[in-house]
Length: 148
Image (cartoon, rainbow, N blue to C red; front, side, top):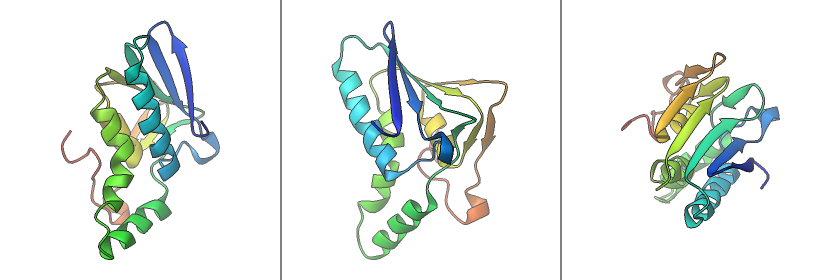
């Protein structure tokens, strides 16, 4: 995996967003890794819970705006699967059969807040900062903000 790091501590899976140079942004690639990792973790009898955290100074600094813009353009052209593709990672976490914990270290911005809200429990460290940002950049607060 390129954007996630997985460790096991007893029956707890520690899943670390591992793109610190870009402050662990949500990308299409990260979403694919989240989906496949949760699929595998749920098949295992050795995993009883998942803790999600971020490598470096941020939990998750939002989404790659180009991915969001591409999804918007695809939707304008009639591709109704484009936006749900962006939400796949959040939805996979939210619908997991395993208990999920967001261990927030540093900033959780925009899509990073969506990931936090997808978890069952949130633990905020001293450095945790929460910022929605959606309205500041002209986007709706989807992917979790609207129903959690």
